[in-house]
Every structure is written in structure tokens, then in C-alpha cells.
Length: 376
Image (cartoon, rainbow, N blue to C red; front, side):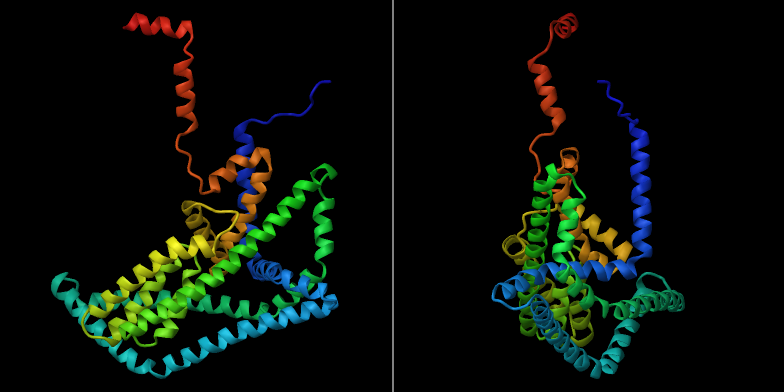
């Protein structure tokens, strides 16, 4: 029987794919106020699902089990927020003094720049004023986004409750939209997706706890003010792959520059944070943030930046789990496996072209050998 399936040229398929990705990015950017809380709710629901299942196996009704799990989550998150808020209040009491010292350091820096770089103080103040105006607009945008997020954050518990309550309905939907012969693959993708997100998020939280303790202890030993607050903030920033760790170092260095004389404390902070990052990258991440799906460093940085461009800080947190889900799906589809390999962290020792050339050299035909002999 004649095959009536039409094969489109590569440039046509590439154009359709690029257009589809552009349309998807546009939709995600404009719907971030709705989709970001829903995405966080899905991750929280996956994390709470084992606890809900355990409570149900003990004979607790489903609704009560979900309510107990959500209450425990609220208590843990509320305790963390209370601790951070008390540290911020202590920091705010001494903020006027820090502002005076910061202005003194800025004045000294301006004089040094004017004397050595021939850039007058008036020009510097003008540049700072322009930077301040742009910073105010960015701050206003950030505050507006934060207020919008706070307005929608009340929907997260409702989303989580409904996702856990309708879990069976959602799972049956994913099985029924695919053909029956693909039900095994669908089950494997769903199970691996749940396992990957759970292992990644639990490991990430454990890593943040250990890094917060190490940061706080190092800053306390160095005598940096507000050591616990800065250590916890550094651990939270470190949860942003490859980007947050760099930003986290700047906070204690700035505080040490304002509150301490000389540069010994700043150098100590840089050395301590470098050592902590070494322990984090070589010991904590492999053992705590271990997952069945591993994304290579290049695409991790790219997707974190893309997530930040689409959804801000929320997108940076959600980017790695989202790409992990894509990799699970790509590895299960034969036509998408090259994309799964591209996202993975397994680096081949030789590329396909080299292997093909070696085979070609070993199996050279008579027609290929004649021109070689003639040239020699």
C-alpha cells in the first residue's frame, strides 16, 4: 500500500518549530501571573503527595490527610519566614548608621576615581543620578511584580489542595489521551517525573540548610555583622544554579566593606565562600541533589537565564525542574532522544563524524584507492 504521509522539507519544519516556540514564550510571558503560582503548586503537591499517601494508608480520610499535610507545610514555611523577618528587623534598626558609613566610602571612592581616572566628581554624580532613576523604575516594577505575586500566593494552597484531591483524575487523563499501547511509557514518564522533582527539591532544601549553616559559621568567625541573616540569604540565593552563588558573595563583602576597616575581612569572606562553594559543588550537590535526570552546566545556565527573562526569580527556580521533565520525555521518545542527550551531562569521548571517518578509512573502496595511489 502506498504511503500517503507527506514529508516536509527541513527548512519548513524548522520554521514551524521556531514559530511555535516563539508563540509559547509569548504566552508564558504574558500569563506568568497565573502560570507561575500554578507551577509552584504542582511542585509542592508532588512534594506533599508521599505524606498524603502515608496518612491515607493509616486510615485517615483523603481530605483530612491533605489538610494535615498543608498545615505542616505552613508551619515550616512560617517558621522560616518568622526567623528571617526578625533578622531583617534587627538589620533595619542599624540601617541609618550603615547608610552614613556607606556614603563615606562612596565619597572616598569618588575622590580616588577623580584623582586617578580623571573622571570628575560632578560627572560621577550625574552618572549615579541617571543610574538611580533607572533603578527606581526597576524597583517599582519589581515591587509591583512582588505585590502581584503576594496577591496570587493565596491561590497556591487552593491549587495544591485541588491538585492532591484530583490526582487520580489527572493521572487517568494523561493515560487516556495517549494510545493504549503507549500506556507503559506514559506510566514510566509520570513516575520518573515525580521521582526527579521530589529528589531535586528535597535535595535542594537540604543543600540550602547545610550551606546556610556553613555561611553563618564562617561569617561569625570572621566577625561580620548580621552573619546569620547574610548566611541564610546566601543559601537561598545559592539555590539559583550557577548564578545565585556569585551574587551571594557580594552581600557579605559589601557589609564587611561598610562596617570594617581595611580589606582583611573582605578577603577572608571571599576565601571562606570559595571554600564553601568547593564543598557544595563537589560533595553536597552530588550526594544531596542527586537525581535520575542530570542537566549539563551549559544548558543549566541558559535555562536559568531564560527562566529569569520569562518569569523573573520564580522562573529561575522553576527552570531546572521544567527542563528535567523535558529530558525525561525526550529520553522516552525515539525521535527526540538526540535532544535528551544534548541536555544530559554525559560527554562522549568521540564525535560521530570521527567514528564515521575511521570506518571509512578502514573500508576504503577500490575506486577511492586508485586516486590515492595516483597522487602518491
